[in-house]
Length: 118
Image 1 (cartoon, helix red, strand yellow):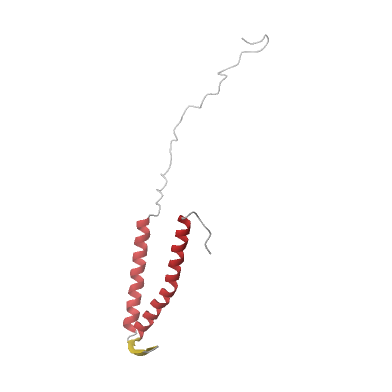
Image 2 (tube, rainbow, N blue to C red; image 1 turned 90 degrees about the horizontal axis):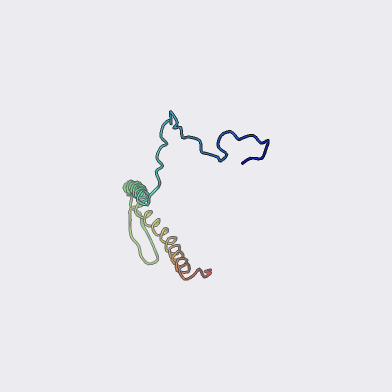
């Protein structure tokens, strides 16, 4: 009941949702998003490793002139490509071994409750 002199409201007094009208032309569907996977990462790494290995093989085969190598008390003759490849592998190991040990040390510390490691 409304007070005297107040006109009756037109339509509903409670908000109602608008009726659904589908879009007549939705356009092209969006392209599906492709996420990166661990297997895809391994595949990319494998292909890049094969390319690098191929370049190393070409390098060693093209640099086959013998060269004399002296190391401490050992002495020998190696093709120059093989000598350079062995020195690169030795340098890689000098960097990778301490780095790997540090990663293992940090993982062990994280598992033990995050104690500070210096």
